[in-house]
Image (cartoon, rainbow, N blue to C red):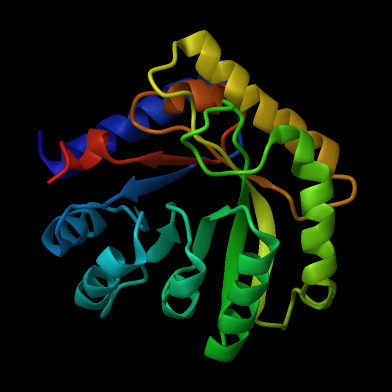
Length: 237
């Protein structure tokens, strides 16, 4: 299967899941290109994929430089953002899906302003409770986002014209090797957290959840973004 055929297949599966859920709203497909070369990103871009996700800043930078010219690719950092990589990430990523530190978010905000850019940030929530994963605990979501509001208050008050970080939603990773019922519980929990926060956090719209093995379950639970690597690019290099 070519990359173009793989993208069409994934989009068809997304459409079927949306129809099953009775949804009319769109779902953003992010091609996770980590470990794959720039040539495959160009091929996927030429096949109509506009959003790409990378796990590590240091791996992403040369690929972004190689493929960015002449294209309007939207770059997503889906892996954990280390504080010492913030200044390199801010000039190139449009979305950061892995905010779980107020200090890192504030650092990213300053770096984005310095670079003259607006970055959409998602709070990572560990809905599966697995110790190996990053992310805040579900029970800490309200307090954590309140602290983020305070840290980024100036930016949140003037989202139309100011550069910097704008909090745009939540992200989670399904249980490792989880069955469909376990995956859906984890995804439903993230949706419930968003629903509780939306009154005080009106820009909290996005739910980034679901990967190659479970994105259909995530769509059934309200995912607005799915992060698909293997089903598009094949096995990791």
